Image (cartoon, rainbow, N blue to C red; front, top):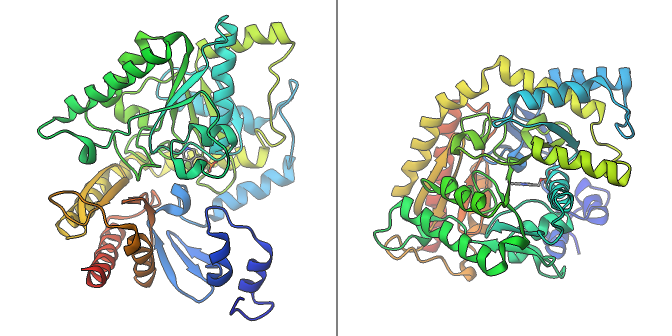
Length: 456
Ligand code: PLP
């Protein structure tokens, strides 16, 4: 039974809303945290508590949580052409302008943009394009897809199959066959004694090569990767990792798809994570900061090689038979376009580059804390690795409930955190200032101190 009064928003939420990524039964007891407003990068709940959300919502609120300017653009777009579709040769200005802009920004030459509504849709569609491509090459058996353990690529049936996290599959009878998983590049946890980052990266590339050989390269279609692995707790790759992985993919003619859903638009200190790490993907999926999360919009960027296959298949089947009602939605694409203009005007990359040293230093300094084993980050994304014993890197046992304790104390300190297994992932709004980063680190240390006092 709920202790919230009848007709309170809390009781009504419990009675009506099924929350994603939430313990359904416990929600009836705990109820929701109801957000009511925001001021820049700070959000406010209905009890008047103000939080610095160190995860920018779901890695996405790049410009904070409110914007007069984007609101005006959405309003104008709704008045001009509040909806039109882009099926069967139809088009409109915002879809054309945004596609053109994305091709201009692309980190490697890309040929076309396929507009979608979410990161999951973008990745799901990119999987279809991978399969379509190999069919067009007369190799329909080239179908298996590799991703890295710990990665998250979305929640549709296919993208959750790409997602290499067993707890996301449990109870659903997933993943689908043909989605294969290779090593997570966690140097701190998995390097052998004395192994350099380069040697560790080479070992992982060798393992991938052995897996491809074991499967038969003629059945392996693509490799999926986000530049900084968000689902593994904001884990940047070790030195040389993508160069060595790409050499293997090239050798066996395996496509590379870069999931830039988190990293795209500045997060790593360059416009794309691909630029930061010298990645040369055949396709890119992006979402989130594309519209500063103020409208649901995403995109797949595909290179000429993939596009030409789509042209050939259109001849064969009469059309490229794929599409969503809201793909290229004029309101969403208008807001995305304006978001990209804002990034240019504020010189987003320069701003991130100027805050990055403070971000890395302030959060990196937390490694002196007894609960923290390691910190790694780049740009404005990073993760703290939590340990019970710094020397052995032993984890806290589950019954301690470390994550729940951290979450609770963080909220008491005005901080919302993203806790992913043993890591706390940081991806604050990209407009965060150096002073706000210092405040974030202060609140984080106060949180760790309070938790340590309980568990030590
Ligand atoms: N890819 C990555 C790397 C993500 O982090 C996410 C979501 O967090 C997705 C894909 C899925 O995006 P969406 O939630 O918009 O479907």
